[in-house]
Image 1 (cartoon, helix red, strand yellow):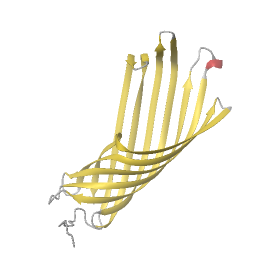
Image 2: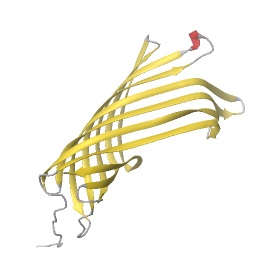
Image 3: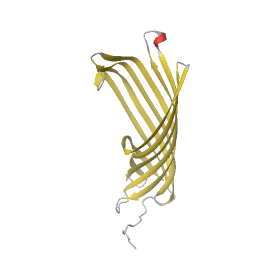
Image 4: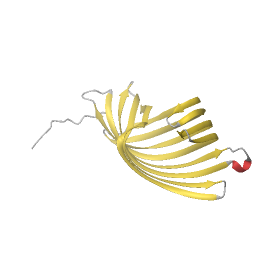
Length: 223
């Protein structure tokens, strides 16, 4: 019988608890900025996300747990021109967008130590999550009749795989880095414009690539 000679070593023992959190924040400010078809872009915005999590090790190197995520984003466009060519230009003035989403996630993790190290290891996380969110968009016109507002309700279902690496600072505290590489998502969006007109959209998506926007760096405690 073929034997690769791989020895199963205990990196995280059975019975331990894992608690921690990841945090992401970014902001931008534009002043007469030019990007592709956008010119004279003046405005600002930010993205914020916090995600506490916990897990319990049912056996050596194997844990199940949960994660709760809050995500918020804001975008203000004071002025921007979309230039298709010299004779075709669109101006956007006074556009505002605010959204926030809550996610509940169930996950399982498998750990593998790097060689004989007890400080560095790899893990693979399989995630199943549901998200609910709301967003508000408004475009201010020259008169009240030209001002438009859109309110959206978002429901989202996701399945994903995220490998990562853990590095222990001491016996209980570790830094974690993970990134999504495989995912399936299903999203439903229901919109109401000016509290009168309604519309909806459904998005199904599958991907198998390295998503740099899903990079998470966090601090974890193994108790």
